[in-house]
Length: 266
Image 1 (cartoon, rainbow, N blue to C red):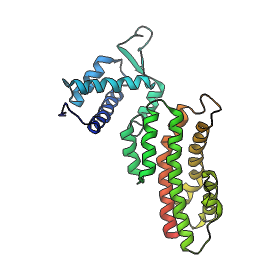
Image 2 (spheres, rainbow, N blue to C red):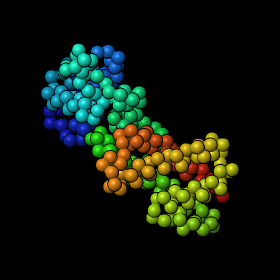
Image 3 (tube, helix red, strand yellow):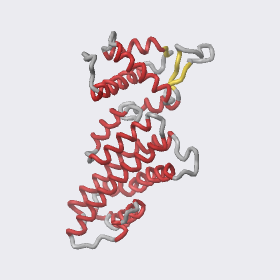
């Protein structure tokens, strides 16, 4: 990897993502061994080909610090080796490493996986990007709101597809479908589609019946809880992590429903 010392901000962000991915890969590979700071850093630096580049080595240190700060890593191997340079992967970290290629702790991997599942417009993608930023900054209330906005945008696009199709067929879309409240919109979409499930292909019908309400409500409830200041911790890392993992499936199902509506809704 050849790096100009005068990197643009965009290039620095790109290399930071590469470094995060490389470091996580090394840690994951050595997850069942005794982890020591220097050996992990040395291995990551060699793998990333950044030895001797102070700026990139400092970026590697910053990424490692973020993993400690966010609770994925903690100091010590056991009681006898409780101090640095020994460290271990926390329970939260091990859960994240199980889905390393698409876990929110790895924003580039997450977005790459998402885009293999569904093509999203600029609006939901902008909220997803901020959701990943806030998640990795331990701002979980903000993450819940950003994920909720992304999911709402996906739902509103589904609503527009349904309204256009109904109008083209001479049907009058119900008032609730055009309501500004997302809860009313979701309820109206469900009422309309529930009456059409017999016309859906079996795989789509089964996914819709099993998952549509579960996906949308988990994300919406998290967003609502985060947006009402009645508790210090209205949402948890686990709940927003779940929302982020659900979002690609919710968006994929919405896209499948849009395709069906455009061709087969009557």
